[in-house]
Picture 1 (cartoon, rainbow, N blue to C red):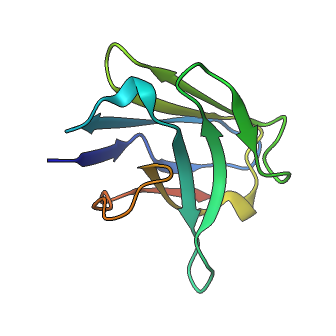
Picture 2: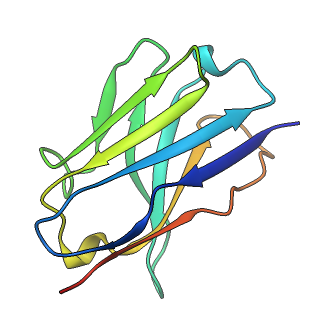
Length: 115
């Protein structure tokens, strides 16, 4: 069955860095567009970045130039390198497979940017 397990979150100071990881299973990872989403308290879920199976990336304007999405198809793993972090990056981050219906949501990983 499809499963996503996110990890790597934590508390970081403004300007700091974190790398998130997502272990995916239950489907042929390499052919799917994968994405990172985030949801802050009281706000709607937001698409942060996506990456095709061949590595073409897309970012929301607020993170472009600071975040880098990548994947390792051999390991069915998705990553998000976050640099120069800001308090507004504080949220629970989730990975998911794009353009599908019915996938379960992972538990997410909490990222808090605060001094």
